[in-house]
Image (cartoon, rainbow, N blue to C red):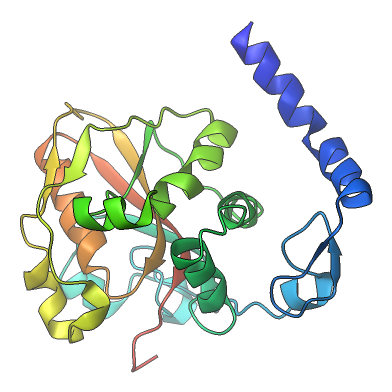
Length: 241
């Protein structure tokens, strides 16, 4: 019964959005023009920065012919693959900041729809990157979890809550030099779930150096995960890219 209800709700979603566009039109979050039921108007949506077509399948940084990059070959991360929707830059950075710091929660399903419109990862289970307890208390929500909810529904995957957590508060990664970020997150995650033989998809908003996602993947593999795929809204390009 529950599965049928969710199926009907999913099929009706375009109709409900169309009705909402007629009855409750809204302005584009970026330029203020009429956007109907969407967060962005078509013009602004068309300006969002995309990543190059040829990316390393492991870290999602530019790589000739889309082959595994030299960095990942020389220093293989604990995660196995990364998929990203956008390049992190103007105006995607403004949208992500609006979700995180202005409580524009409607952006979370919008980001999810953008990710679902591109190639999707496969896995047995989905997890949202845990947020530090202090920041979760200040913000009131985990943006990664809000993005992951519609993704898990669309893929028909479980999204367990509370099995993985960020056990220690650390300095925000954005406040640190890139070379110090791996050390900052060492040992910060805990996992209370047996992941033996499972392929896990990890959802987050932004991947910068990949240090936090790499440490989380290390934790998941210690608990039996055979494969970890990052699925992120935006990827920051390194200075040499």
